[in-house]
Length: 333
Ligand code: CP
Ligand code: NVA
Image 1: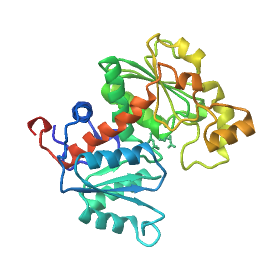
Image 2 (image 1 turned 135 degrees about the vertical axis):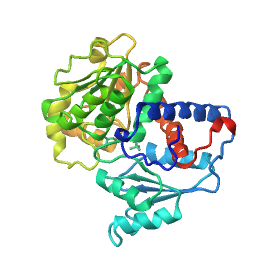
Image 3 (image 1 turned 180 degrees about the vertical axis):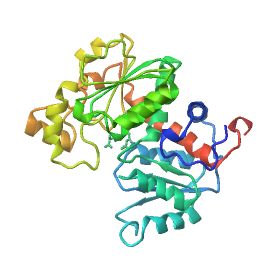
C-alpha cells in the first residue's frame, strides 16, 4: 500500500484497505517502541504543527512521533505567528510547504485544511477541525482491534453530541471498516443527513448505520463511546441548553449494564468525568452536576480503555506521518 505524498484530511478519502494498512503499520511502530528499538527512519525531514485550537494529546503525539522518527519538529500557534493576521493562509501554506516535508493543522474550518494542502503541496494531516478528527480514528480502531482481536461487525455505539467532529469521523470510520454504528443523540444533535446517507452507502452490504434518539438502545453494544457535550469553538452560551438536552444521554453504570457484558468504554479525551477541572467545577457550582458525558465510576472502571486509546494516538500518528512521507517498507529496515 503506497500512501506517500497523500494528505490525511478526512477518512472519506481513504479506502478500507488503506485504513487497515495504517492500523497494521501502527502495530509495528508500537512494538518497536515497546521493544526499545530506535526507529529514526525519517532523519533529515522536518514537520510543522499548526494549532489554532488547544491540544494535549494530538500535539504531544505529533511531537513524540516526529522525534522518534528522527524528524525536526516546529510548533506554531496562531498567537505567535503571522498566520491569518498579517499573512493569508494561502501564502503561509506556500512558505511552509517550501520549508517542511509535512504539516499538521488543527483549527476550525475543514475547507482551510484542504486549502493548506492545496497550497503547501506536501502532506497535510488534519489534527481536528469542526467537522472531522481523522487521526483520532486510527488510534481508536487500533485500540478496538487490540482489545477484541478484530474489527468487522462489532457493534459500536456513540452516545451524546451526534454531529460533532469525533462523532462524524467515527461514523465514517465504522462504515469504511465494517463496524455496525449506532448514533444515539437528541434529534437536534443528529448528524448531517447527507453524511449519514454517504456512510450508509459506504457501509452497504457490510455493516449497518443507525441513528436514534433513544438512550436505551445499547443492548448488544461491544463499544460505548462518548465525547464532550460542547466542543472547542462553540459559544459559552450553549452549555446550559446542551446540559439539559444531553443529561439523559450520560454514560453511567446503568447504561453500561444494558450493553453486552464484554462492552468496553471509550472517549477521545479530554473528558468531564469529575470536578477536577476549571470548567467541571464551574458546571458543578452552576448546575450541580459532578460529571457530564460520563460518570467517574465508568471512566475509572476496568471497562474503560481511555488511556490506552490516548497512548495509541502517538503510535498511529507515527504510522500516518511515516506513510505520507516514505514508501519504504519498515520490515526491510
Ligand atoms: N483527543 C484529542 O484530540 O485530544 P487533545 O485535544 O488533547 O489533542
Ligand atoms: N469534540 C471535541 C473533541 C476534542 C478532542 C472538541 O472538538 O472539542
